[in-house]
Image (cartoon, rainbow, N blue to C red):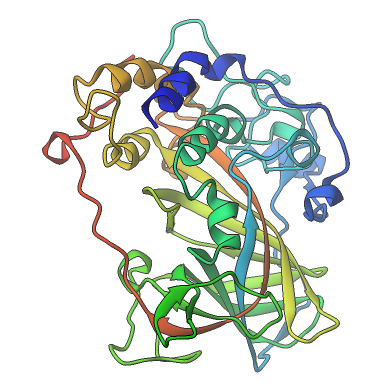
Length: 382
């Protein structure tokens, strides 16, 4: 593993990674979202936006005349999620999270940690810098492991993520939905000898997965469970559907990727919700949000370095990586501090996903990840 990790470091230059050639997003199974473009009045009300010529790509707003009080509960498991999407998906990915089109006629919403360097937004002010510049390295780290990247692990039944939608009525415009997020720890099955094994899911609506209650920070029963008895901590109690697009705002999410976890702040889920021919509802969309630089350092501090230590502190591999991460920061971790002339301390991300009906029937918490450097977390300095 060490030579492959070394190659990843040697070839990585976040600033040099470019968006790939545009192709059809349908190839990756991700349906284009009906983006909302800010009108002139909306742009004029944003004091930070001097980029009057930019058509900001915004998260759909709540419907004006919604239906309220549906009775359905939907539980889907994520079938695919891309941390390093191809150019076709990138072309329609992300939203303007900070209200400015950086390098598109408007200012940056924060000050770069690297002198004379500005991280520019793609069209519409979409904030996806972490996806385009860090996703490639994350993919290399995962593929250096025998289990492969996140989608390979999902396909093998080793992990997934659950999205639970409650109070849904099946309509195109609804409000007061409750959307919860959980981390899944595997798809268990029994072999011919009655032994417990992890097996690939069939994605036929009947897969019974295990939930990781510790990573999900959820209230779960200790006994075996089936589709109930748990309550989400990562939850939006005021989610809505606008023209068939489900929108949920979370305070944060913790996403397990097999080798570590990633904490996303102010994440938003935007996904088309559609009935499936075989029953249930499918979700096709994206998670968008911010990952603080110190949370990135915290995430990789549990990983082994080439030297035999952990990726943190004075480790040479970490010291080579640190300035690249700091230089790629393009947004504030706290949305309330956007456009306040403070240093960029986070990277913006959008992760396209596809989720299909599933069930939860087991509790199986994963191992506790132990960081190096006694838990100390490095900081970026201008």
